[in-house]
Length: 110
Length: 115
Image 1 (tube, rainbow over the protein chains, first blue to last red):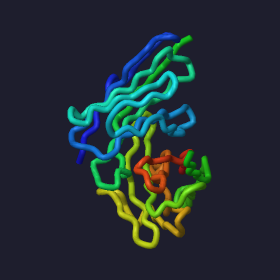
Image 2 (image 1 turned 135 degrees about the vertical axis):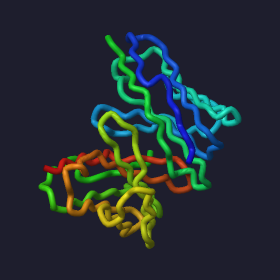
Image 3 (image 1 turned 120 degrees about the vertical axis):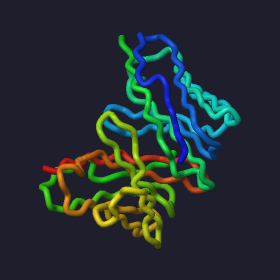
Image 4 (image 1 turned 90 degrees about the horizontal axis):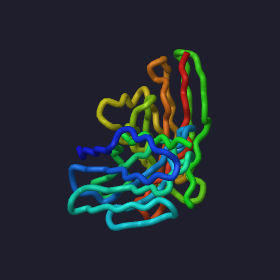
């Protein structure tokens, strides 16, 4: 099956700093999503981005499908950004059977 | 946006009992839903694909007799952990793709503790 690698595994920032999270995948994909898992376990949809670039407030994401990677940018980080960020991909035709990476644990200190 | 709801959010049970977890799509119909399991500090692992009107498809290594899945309607899938043991303690999360889109939305998750 498809392999998904996320880096870095852990990231500690001071409030206000910017960061880039990376997701590499081993095969072509029909779906790529970024999620933020909050301390209660809920997965919050950040981006549905099989290709291209999207922005939502302080967050943006870019997927370069031909080179099999995606980047999540967090600007002006806040303590509420803390949590685990997951990248998940699907290579199948439905695009919904997601394989998750191991996640990046982000801690933003005040 | 699309909403998927799970119930219960937390459940504690004794060994040997069965526990049912419900997953509902609130504002769209889902012919397919997915059940994931997550261990502490770990990633999500796909357990099975729930199909409305037919049998669920289980991932390799997942015991179908232990984890019974029923997709009773276009908005409801249930996961029953049968004869639960302490090693079944985990965080179970369901998901569904929004109609017409491949984007997957997740429920709040259900934390199961088996004593």
